[in-house]
Image 1 (tube, one colour):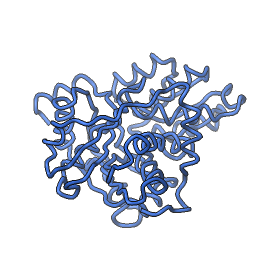
Image 2: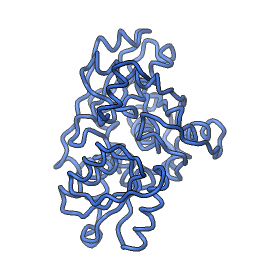
Image 3: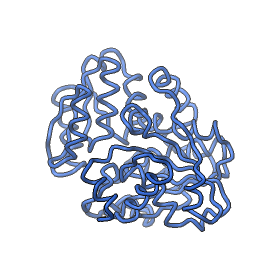
Image 4: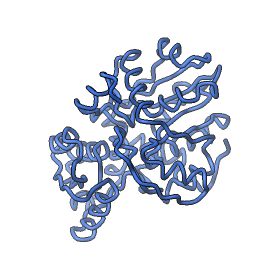
Length: 328
């Protein structure tokens, strides 16, 4: 992998974001599990970055702290708004409470009630609008214009991307010999962050992407080289349920990824079960997608050290019951 000048963030941006968020967030663990290696096979050594150990059980809190700590005093006083399915909203609500910034969040109808309750528990105003994530984002954009709130998109924001890049920065500073990373892509912040850090610290490291087959727009568009619209079907991976591609990440994904696959609901469910049995950590669908992508193509990484990100553990009780019961 080679450094690209047209990528939206740099290693310098990530280091600045890490300096801002470190007073609020310690590094998350990077762990190795022999049982997980055995399950993947092909002599692959797997390293798991436990973003589920953050205060909101998700990596998104990094992104949101990166944004809020970069706001001016006037922007903080006015407050922030975002569309979310849960983890971005929880991260923003937690960061807002930590720094005294009002937070308004828009979720679609029928959103995960446990995630809604978590966002409210952190002090956010919750607004229900639209049928899916993208509708919620559109409502957030309207509130930004009408109320003068600072809009914090979960992907199309430079400080969000800088925050996500700190994950891979921590990983490679702790384990510089990682050969490849397999990361989930909803909007692409984790993947762009991994590519950015690798391009400057480990140019031979390959970054591979994974998306839910139920929301294939960004995957299909990547392979086609242009926007290919596709509907979003019901999925256990709330964080991957997007039907758009995003300006700040798509061109970088096109130029920097070594590969991009989709995984089924059954494959993500199996990855959740495997995380539970080998690491005794809960993963939600999107949080397990990196492992699911690795399990779908282990021969591609034979004999190599592969980093994956357990991006979130906010799985609701009913989905977890169905996963453990083998109903998916």
